[in-house]
Length: 86
Ligand code: V3L
Image 1 (cartoon, rainbow, N blue to C red):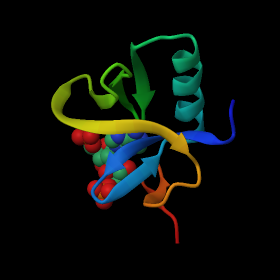
Image 2: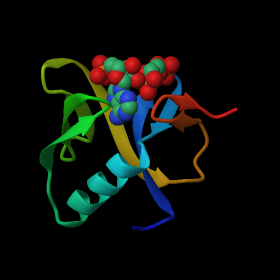
Image 3: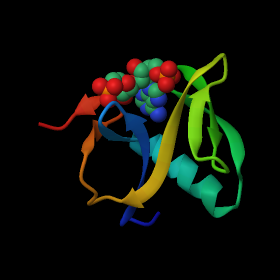
């Protein structure tokens, strides 16, 4: 797993880092070229669409969040999976 890069999903005015397990799962699927798959995140099944770089709940597609793979050092990172940095 490349330490320099992390996976992020969109928050209100910034980005949240995915939890480590989810992040590593997305990274390994990304590396094998998978574009569309499901992951269990915080008890809900999410569709991860790496073609369009969005995620959404399988059973509630009304809210689609952007996602991105970027350097860990980017600004505007709010925290990890909903846990705010101080
Ligand atoms: N990992 C963890 N929780 C998630 C994820 C994920 N990949 N995707 C959605 N949720 P939706 P601000 C987010 C949570 O898209 O203040 C943040 O983690 C999501 O949590 O309809 O707007 C914060 O906890 C939301 O609570 O599936 O930046 C919170 O929003 C819930 O699933 C507020 O962040 C429904 O999102």
